[in-house]
Length: 402
Image (cartoon, rainbow, N blue to C red; front, side, top):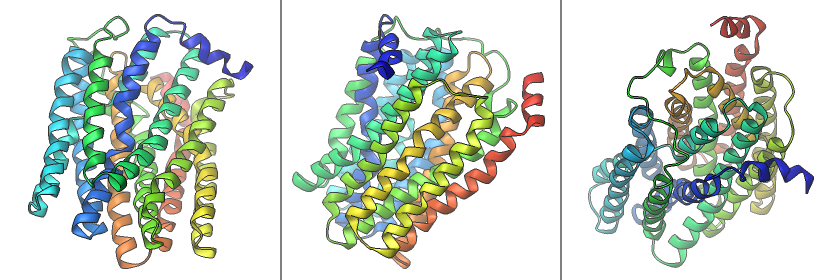
């Protein structure tokens, strides 16, 4: 297939397949952990509000800790920092599992899940390797970024299905246990691929990414988009549970990620037109428009299959939006701080996911799952309003001057 030729060229690079394989294994659990935690906690404690609050606490902790971990990765290298940080996060997951299984007080769940905040940004480290290998080749880097976003979506497609299957057929803690094993195994394989690792920078050049021109508005957009993802996940789990089909929730969420995965691969195979700053508002507008479909499907039909179809279509706007956002982050991050810059973007997403999860849990428990689908639409509309300044001519001119 001709449209896949750009991807074949990517993986002809020495070491590309090896680091990608390890990174893929390490990233799969990111689609498993939150779903596993919600199913595990809600199933044993009988409260989606508690489950949403625990996952929100962990994501909020990650939003605080992740940039610090990323800065250490840029300064000391991926292998030296990522593996021990992953070991701490795995211990946090195992602690959560034991606390749930043995009926420990609620506060131990919050403390255990917060310890998983040291999980390194595996996607950011992989994108940093591509940027190192493809320096100066903007078209190939666009393809690599699109591939990485498709991998993210693949993990969110397979992760919830695997988590729901494990928790439903084995025991409630199985999803968390398998996720922890995969994370540690994948990180070991990834960090042993030293030939493709970007060089460490003992002295960090330039300003911190958070103070770089154009980065704060992007982080605000990421925060709002995170609200979309966090609310959608918790509300969909509750919607399926309300119909007595909780085991199907993973498949429904996987279809949304599948739509994004396909769109991401297609987006990476074509050459984008115009600057990324001009494309971003259009991408977010498409996301906001398509997210009305799940709301209508839930409100007008109450059908889980129709909801799944609506989420599949709605997901198609996610990857192009995220690829464009990450492209802007790469353009605006000071040299030598790429992992930190991309982790800040992920931090913004995680902060939004935390808020979306908590608000989604409250909404489904006090109102209804159907009402909860208004939250992603609202978050996307906020992201659209925040993205508009990034496309203004004056703003782009200021960035170019800097």
